[in-house]
Length: 314
Image (cartoon, rainbow, N blue to C red; front, side, top):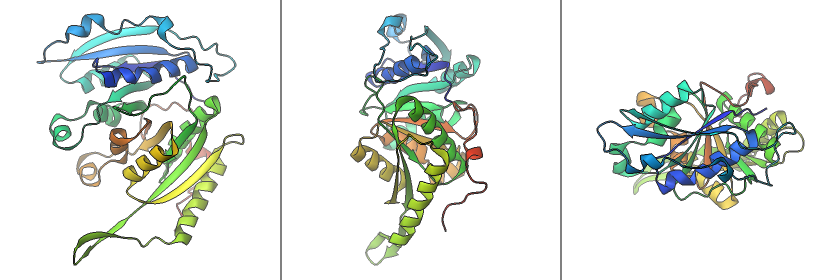
């Protein structure tokens, strides 16, 4: 069962941030959760003139969606909208501190999706929150499609056959149970690159039988964790994880990607990169990142519902 009592919606008053409010609002309807609208004032920066107008949103502006089917014991009536602000050395620090002090269950925020040198020097508040928050985080990239009337038809779950991805699948199952969405499990086999006389080119050593083995493993994973009544699809692709998942989500009209973050830090993260961070910058839809540590929205462990020590196919 999915449990959400408090949702944090950080905003910098940009159009990108405000677009993410629809997701927070619809989830508040579904779970009868509080929405905490929050603005971080950064030290040594000019105060925002808009602070005095901090999200003057009455409760009746939160939509009641006919497309969402909440649990029978709920009335789908939105709860309190709480407005707050804080000053800190960075927006990320303020958001993380508020999350801990108010015991937030879920953060929903917009992401500007910066890339290249600008992101390298300025950093990313959304990426910092994803990496360090003690609860799951939903991000909506600037330009990505928003949730309309609470309608989630297709959920995509990237799978690497670790316990982390099983946790993500457990969250997908709980959400699909409430919304009637289908679930697609996708596994990406990384391309190999070898030097050639003309440079470095991809070399495809992946055979069709191997792809079929991964499809079978995905099918077995779905059968072991997804209850009857929820449609499950599987897909194995060859390529780079973030790019392949992004392209598939765009082509198939995915409404929500749910993935697990391994929480890599330091040099390992610098050299290997982060699929979760890349997806949050590129995905055409909202991304729910489930943490490898901290609070889970699903109270039961995903790993307990699978075969002991199940490994990916050889």
